Length: 206
Ligand SMILES: Nc1ncnc2c1ncn2[C@@H]1O[C@H](COP(=O)(O)OP(=O)(O)OP(=O)(O)O)[C@@H](O)[C@H]1O
Image (tube, rainbow, N blue to C red; front, top):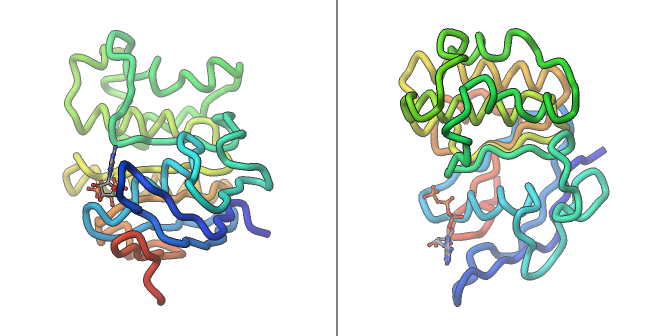
């Protein structure tokens, strides 16, 4: 059964149509990659699946509901390119916030897995960009959401930390999450279950 279903989706930003008639179905427990050059429409499609934008035409459904109506982190979480962390709060406070709000016990290994355990108590404004990106990634994974939408999760990571990020993605998939990653990082594309290639807003035929 598909968890994310986009049907006939087109999207216009300003005066430009940036996605053209996209139809895809994605199942739970998969690592799905949106690959494509800069400007091909990856972030836009991520935002539509995460429900923070609504398509100009067509429908995006998550678990049978219009994506923009979901608004529940346990159903769809998002790692945006602009991380939207609370910089006065600590790494752990940011990463674990969704669990705290829902009174859920977070996976005790999550911060360790992402190399954040040693800086868990440090305010985010005293951390590097790569650390901040992994903090926002932990926040997207902490609830074991049905769908985790991750926009360029390795954009600020060195090789060692790319390995950690990939391990965290695999752990989420093993737990049943549909992980949807926008990336041009071949190291993630290599381990993906499904690869959707975007070119100028069109899905390329496989
Ligand atoms: N706020 C905006 N207003 C108008 N056009 C936009 C806006 N944001 C993005 N676009 C345009 O939409 C198209 C798709 O952008 P998008 O950010 O989805 O691409 P992307 O594949 O994620 O790129 P990148 O890898 O650089 O993040 C691009 O042509 C871009 O110029």
